Length: 117
Image 1 (cartoon, helix red, strand yellow):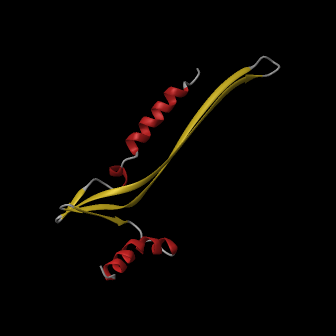
Image 2: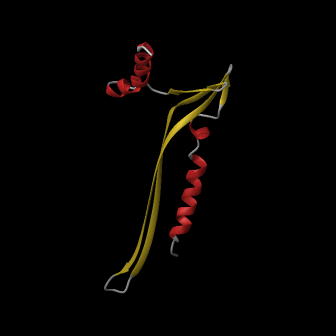
Image 3: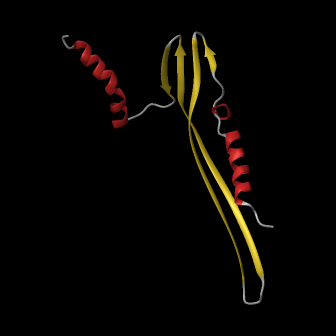
């Protein structure tokens, strides 16, 4: 029985589509007082498929195939809204050079606010 690549891919894709949701990892949107909090995730997926057939000098024949998929999901943070204001709150804080780059917009804003018009 030969496995049809399109059928295998469709079944694996359907499974990943059902599992790769923010709700599956850290929950649905929720209210916290006046704030609406929406979880944000990072998702990575991979898929592999292989198959073959062959025989030997004794006229023995064989065939086989296999498929595999992997998925990694990581909570990244929350989008938080209050009225028309939207903010992003990261799940973990950056260190080193990445943290410095994250502060650049705030530092620029403070610098520009102090400049004469």
